[in-house]
Image 1 (cartoon, one colour):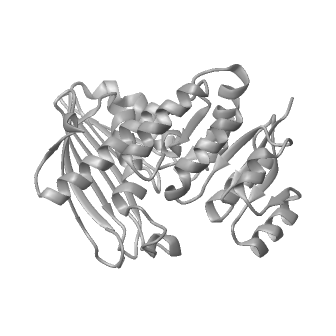
Image 2 (cartoon, rainbow, N blue to C red):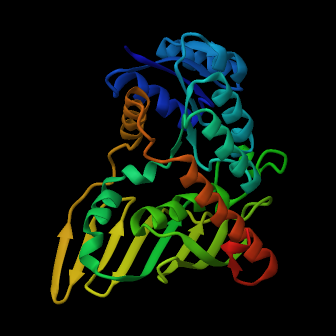
Image 3 (tube, rainbow, N blue to C red):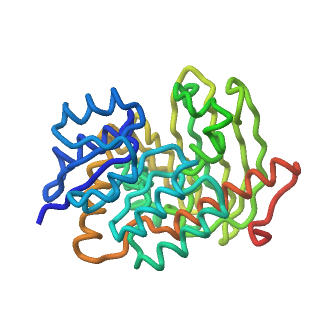
Amino acid sequence: MTFRIGVVGAGTHGERYVRHGLQDVPGMTVTALCRRNTVAGRKLAARYGVRYHAEPETLIKDPEVDGIVVCTPPSSHFELARAVLASGKALLLEKPMTGSLDQAEQLVELDAEAHHRLMLAQALRWNPVILKVRQLWSTLGRVHLIRLAQRLAPTTLGWQRNRDETVGGSVLLTGVHIFDLARFLSGHEFMTVDSRQRQVLNPVVEDFFLARASLSDGSQVSLEVSKYTRSRACWLEAVGEEGQIMADYLDGGLLLRRGRDEEKFDISAAAPTLPLVLKDWLVAVRDGLPPPVTVQDGLATMRVVEACYRSAATGRQFDLADL
């Protein structure tokens, strides 16, 4: 039977889910969408031949919708996720999972009561370059240093510059990508964070942060998000006792050095990840399997977010055991 989904928050990113859900995932279709801009929402629904809902609540209750993708600003994630889980429908929730650690902890409980219906859309886990890095990770030997950086142009999204709508800046909105990657690749949890942040061009929230962290195996992690530059870059480095990796997961390409040997992998990062996210969500729902990215993964990431903010507020290293 075809898995019918609805998309709440069908803006620029949400429309990608609509398109891929209709065209690129066998066994899945899109039957409805919700967008707060009524004129744009109705036009989009007409273009794709799906129903338009002016309110998320009516889409959640739509009997022609089996699963729901939530792509709204994070300040709304908790209430929408709670409503979807209460409905008994499957949920694919965009990151960050919630707007606060307290909400994330509550959502863990709600998801358990709903028999684990929530999957978090940490799409970088499906990036081809990242997947190759994970495949090669064991060849590095004991890894002592990981560096992750995302450098992006200033946001063009109005809600990220509106004090009434955004609940965080680059730590929450973009940092979750690299926090999750550090966990995903290393298999270890964050223990301490020493973070500094700054508002460069965004008048409301931080658009630059730099953090140093330690993981549960003792390795050190350098974390950076610069969201003020008229350029883009996404870099990853991992340095182990047997070798090192340098990877570009925006434009593609990976370099592995071991001893005097150097191997280059010409891997494109251009392939869209959302069809893969949707396919794995479908498999998990259809076969009753644990989702590839769980609510516990989301909670772990939100703990790092909270630690970064607390460290920046005090100017000192923060121990996640104190959360």
